[in-house]
Length: 358
Image (tube, rainbow, N blue to C red; front, top):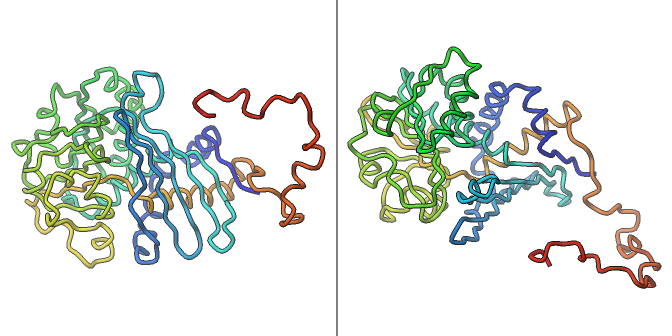
């Protein structure tokens, strides 16, 4: 049987654990897997692009487990009343290929993205950082705010979004955290001014320049989350030139990250090298650092692995028959039986499918 975690089951599991604790545990899981970087079979994600968005598959494996995520990115979806980003994923046993877990990953992606931001920031930010600017107040913004507040000690966040309703939503959702000061800013420049950390998590699929060189201040750390596909950026090229830049997996980030606008020999450092002590993170207090985060399959592997452990511990989700029983592995036809070949007048099995699915 395969364990299945749908949205309600995952939501209950996270709520039972607590968002802050879940994020903390996920950061630990991510760190452990990043420290095993060389053990993974890695590749850039497979992407199918359209004028309005992208659909991607993100596979990865070590000697024990294979994981993948299906994820989309369609900024226009908010106008249709559906999510911009939707995802699901699976975890399987490498020795047999048997699927162990099938899980929602829309909620979990927001959590793992925030946890990855913390993993990078813990190695790159100035230790006295207390103020963050949060540009883009959509679906992932609360998770970023909670992560930086509870895991890194940020006590003031200045927020801005061109959609004021999104900012209203963010402020309302964070009102239960009195120790975190939320300041509404009238512009990106106002939000960024005086910030130790700047998190950009915007959705538009466009060559945007959310952060420009004149906004940089000594010692600032930029957590650039929103640029995650070809044709989508958030940072001015001169911001990158003025900074020490870190990435998850260079072959993928060269295509999808903010560094897609830079020449191929533009220097970047993969995060695992800093975590393993092979490279220096921040070199001095005045240096500007950038984490050009596009999301990498290892992070989803870690999230799936963590979800699976929690599901087993708390008996969360349900077991489903995703794979036929192995009573006679050579007799798959027995599932439909001889009677299936004598049916008359039955509607085709696809009769009720939407036309686009046929």
